[in-house]
Image (cartoon, rainbow over all chains, first blue to last red; front, side, top):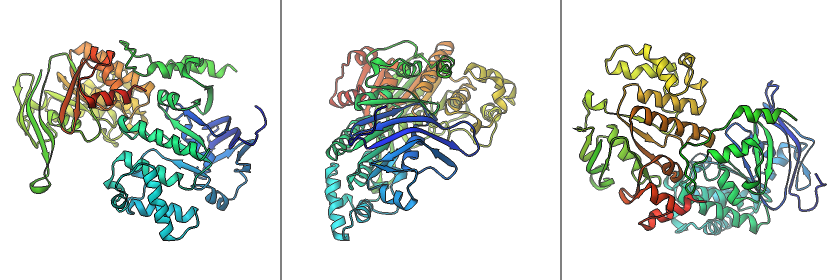
Length: 282
Length: 245
């Protein structure tokens, strides 16, 4: 790998995560650089993709030990950062969008107040100004009838709308890096595209880097410039499109999906023995 | 096998009453797989729950395997259908061993103790018989969904209702479960009604698909329609395009 240059937002070298006294790492020596681009991370549940996102944000519980040769964000070594410094980074310079808006929004506060809180916290503005910024941001994520919506509580809005509120909240401070952890898997297919396009539009505008974590390899392939495939805590392959997939795991994942255009009688399933054989050889 | 006439379901009463299923009619032949696709809140699960006898608010006529069923099912009517739910973490009792989970339907219907049928039930869904001694938290999501399918088959119903059976699973595990469902259907001449929001799963499994929107069926597609991308309604067109990324 080449030396990190000015464009590199996040540089990760040999990142590992151990939980408790387990000898087996949850993440095993992952290295990558993130520029102002869309990077997809795919894998099955338990492959370590969410743990990777959380390790970068330093959001793992104390039982998760993170080690890395390099973990720099915007020139700042994250592993040496104090918790106070991390708090000023999170939500401000780096943002995390989680899977289900029903759980990640505060159920007892109205939408408007929650978004304004983000502005109040990160932009150092007054209360009235914060509400104004919140309203413009909600307008940017194409929420109609803002006056009314800002007074609603999270349970009164739909999943797609909730996720757009989350995006508004997270991107309000114009972060350098956005980690989206399964941002669309709780949503209907018909709103999935809208949410992704919106995310892309805002991230591009800020010239930020986007890490899209998902289990849906086809969606990631359609949306991202680079795809990292994870299996058992390791990156088995980095691709720019699905056709060049070499690793049996990646191929297995692609073949396991039913395809509207290419019907098969039986779906292919993963041959885990073959994958493990390839994995242990080097 | 299934014949539904003018099925309507309303929740609430008075001014807050809301009709979620608006007078739908459809039928399913023996051995057929019917898919119902639509967005969340369109009423697709409610249709399924009415068929299963879990909701009793419906009006209209439901005929299962030649019998008109009542809103409150008799024991014989309950034996006609079984259902598999979306979330394998929520649909199995967390403190019952798998053997008890599987024997429960037999005992509930007074057909004996049911313990002796547990090993064969596990084997037919591709799980080792030793799993009978485990608790649900000792199984993965895919294995739990297999247990849920085994439980649905315990009373040997002819109709299985599948409510998003794979949407909580990884694609790799989803493929295994869909293959299992296809094998069981062939072996036992089952009739499926499959509800999902994922058009590619529906297209893979179903002979015929009904597209549902706000409580009514707006479109009916055959397998050929799906492969050739033919739709007869703007809404199903939109749904189709959103799925085909």
